[in-house]
Amino acid sequence: MPAGIDRAVDRLLDDLAAKRRVDAATQGLKRLGHNAVPRLLDALQDPRRSRRTLAFYGLQFCWDARALPSVTVFLADPDAELRRMAAIVLVNGAGFDALTERCVPLLGNADTGVAAFALHHVESERPDLARTRGAIADPVRCHAVAPHLPRYHAPDLIDAVRDLAVAPFPETRCGALVALIHLNADDLATRRLIFDRVTGGPPAEADLAADYLLWHAAPEDRSRLETLVVDQGDPLLASGLAAALTALARRPDRRPCRVGPCRPPPADGKTGAFTTAAHPSHDPAAAWHTYRCSDDMEPHWAFRGAGPPADLVAERRARHALQARLFAMPQAGGGPTSDVSSPVPPPDRYAVPVRGYALSGESNYGRTVPDGAVEGFIGLVHVGDDIAWRQPHAPVFSVAVGVVRLVTWIDTWGTLVVIEHRDWDGAPVCSLYGHLSPFVCVRAGDGVCAGTKIGAVGRSYTVENGGYEAHLHFALHAGRFVQPPAVGSVIDLRYRGSLRRARVLRADGERTEASVVVHSVRHVVVKMTSWTAGYVSRAWWDAGDHGWLEPTRWLAARVTLAAGPGRS
Image (cartoon, rainbow, N blue to C red; front, side, top):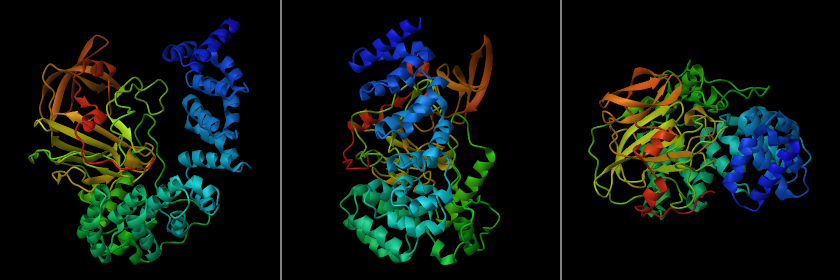
């Protein structure tokens, strides 16, 4: 039997190598499952790199604990691509904790590439302020830690982070620019750097500098901002600068830097947790000090199929509410706001949701979530397009003229915005933008134009973005924002922890009553009327009446605003 399995695995790997019957070969590996592991581990020792690559591909579907030692060895391989594949297989097979544990011993590896690789994965799951302070001072490790700097709030990092904002590598510069926002860096050197990036930086860095000004523009910047908006030839950057100018008009003349120094950093490097104990509205200086100094970093939280702990949500929402008040964000107090009454104007043009959005090519709209997906949703179909990966604070734009219907926070979405539009033929359609930063530039009821900046991508693995790696979930849904399902129609409904098909009994703009059958027993369930979803069941997808539209195809037929270059 083992010899027969070995021959079967070899045939499947040969098919994959020749790129013939790829789907059938993949299904064959899945059927073999853990029985294929010994032969795949043999292939990992093959001197041919191509064979090792195929072995890693197979181990994504054929995992058991026997593979752990062999795969772990490749985390220290000189070949960066083999290290990357080993990390993917470990996460799929054993989880993020297993990968992190095996990267910790590699932090001091003599191969700087391996050490940087390990630091990236450890920092992704277990951020540590003391380790980050040391890494920023290291000319090699600083580039590995740069993408994670946006998590930190500790003011003592400002000088080192500002130096990284002029580093040779774009990813390092972008990470540092975002970090300066959350470090509340408001000194003269930082502001000079920001305006240099706005006027002469690459588009992605200019966008981040504009987002810094959304948060931190001061009254003395008004005239310069007005000139930049008028003279700006890049419409997306102009929209970001206009949003900063609007924010400045709402904001009182006080900034974090004017309230005195924070406490010194703790000697042991341990971070503090945010507390709402000391930010009375009658004492702005105390409120600013609480915001700047009550915690040193945004806590790590990753969505892995379950919502965040209630105490963590309460703590972060308290900080976001204080944030909304201090920075005069449009959504008062940071809470949910909705609007269903304002009329929607006819369209004039269409725009892209993020800079560099591809109107053709690969999209994950309509993809079924595979077995073993760490975020859950296994077997469900993705109904939007996930874009702007690993680009925290990349600006997000309305795709057409419309009315903002919803600004809210949901634990699996993070900050969420829905805008209602009218298509060329007058048909209503809604655009949805999920996993945003808390600073949303609009409130429910606001009218927006094509290309209006509505917010930015939220930071990775934080409560603010729903616990995902930084990205934008962009989706389009046919129909009005208020859209009760038709009586007698069949919809998805979550009941007793599972997504089930249910028949609508009655519905209005607020509540939907539907019947669901479980183990031959009929149950009547009442839920809030809402079409917002990131995934639908395969049955509803195949039925074709779910209402979700393919974003790239829809926009490609309409968009007139050039996407422009962006970060890859």
